[in-house]
Length: 157
Length: 157
Image (cartoon, rainbow over all chains, first blue to last red; front, side, top):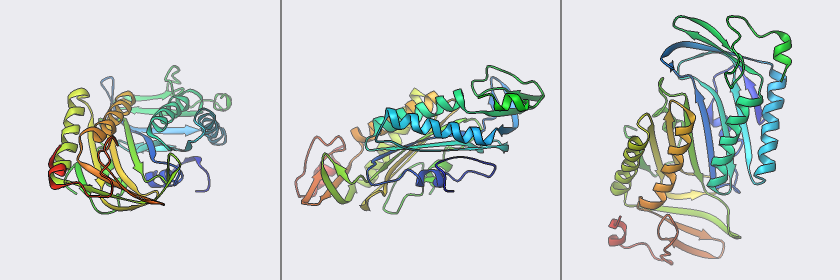
């Protein structure tokens, strides 16, 4: 994988993401891993589907990396997000940030996950025990009911 | 590896540590990875040696896990620290904490690395470009010059 910010439909190997940020200048790497949780507010998830407008999603992940480099000039960042069907405990997203010292690694990693939720066009379909629901945006402010987002919505970043 | 908190003299495989905290109750895993940095305040490190009072170090790592469980009852924690000779960029320590939601994973992981520096009897010998130095405690408040810590010091936790 040549990119540092990418979308994949395959299981994520954590080490692929870490390898992109390991370097002798760094003493600290913070990693955030999002996994598929079984219960959300008492509702049971059976599995999830993620769908993305891939080119735009990768562009936005890369933008987040650039924002981090502006805020933490010594940081190196890599992010991968999986799409398609994910089972319970599968890894949906990995963020890795390396920095010389640990304060910055924690702060930048935290920044990255919040920004992913805000600006990256990835949609999640919850397959609940009792039905399905498209979670419209990553902040979960919009529900798409049981329909796919439209082409227009997927382009609207 | 049966333990969730352990010292090893072998290269650390990140996935071994992550696997211990992945579970369907969790939606977030935060990982802190400490790696061997080349430069510290302008001084070049060639390689490092870590030495530990192993039984006590594992006991203290386990204590940190218990402290985390008290503060964040939904958290599951695993920690591994390597000893022996480590080259630049080698992984010295991995902390993994899984929680239902990400706030707690970040906070608990951060707590763990600070506590490791405070209470775990592991000593670091810097092999600088221009000499060697035992870093007496993890907060780097004590230097042991070019001598190993005494048996007594290694037992003093």
